[in-house]
Image 1 (cartoon, rainbow, N blue to C red):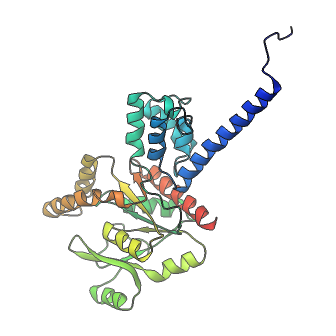
Image 2 (cartoon, helix red, strand yellow):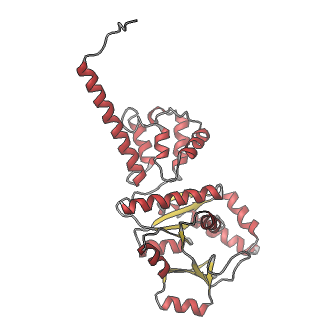
Image 3 (cartoon, rainbow, N blue to C red):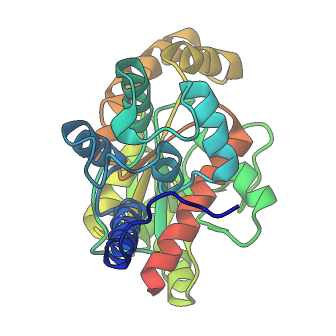
Length: 306
């Protein structure tokens, strides 16, 4: 049966096709900017709210989420369910409550735009008892291609920690020698008790060989690395809630009650510093947090070679 519906003139179809291609390219550019760190996802959402029919407003929520480093398709679908947003929703068409839920989630994602410099050094830091060591250990065991820097410390080993794998355990005299010889990339006294430092040699050698290095340290150390290597990428590990952080600190039973109270006060100050970091990862689940950190490392490694 012939189609008797009126057809647009050929010139209109060509113009419409060109406009559609231009719109797709514009949306692709927005996604590329988010992936490269040139814009944050929050900035894209704000632009969509201001102009629902603009480029950002026409971007699907699923597209925005998958453009964020460390969010793959599987995690994106899970997030869409958690946010109660349909997969065909565009940013400009979100309801007020959907927009608020998405904004709350995005506030834990990339916080700065530093695409002009890229480093093979990724620093993982966070408050006491957040699980930095556990996440780093999971990465060591499950992602053999990732190079983990091993810190030196003057404290004694905890149960299950191994010399040369968990830390280099040294006495005060040896630590003093390493400081005087300039062998440490950074060092600090943590919790007014023990000293921790990052041996510079292994980090420099790994980066010179073209490898990405993960450095798991405390907040003071992260700041020192940023001063020494401004191009380093800083990742802040967050607890799901404050209550969970308290539970983890008390549950590990490695400090007395007075020390626990002091560390919790320190943790409040540490949490307030998360805005200094390039990315934030919430440690709901160790395996998932580890995968997010590794994904970030692969993205930064690819960018440094581009």
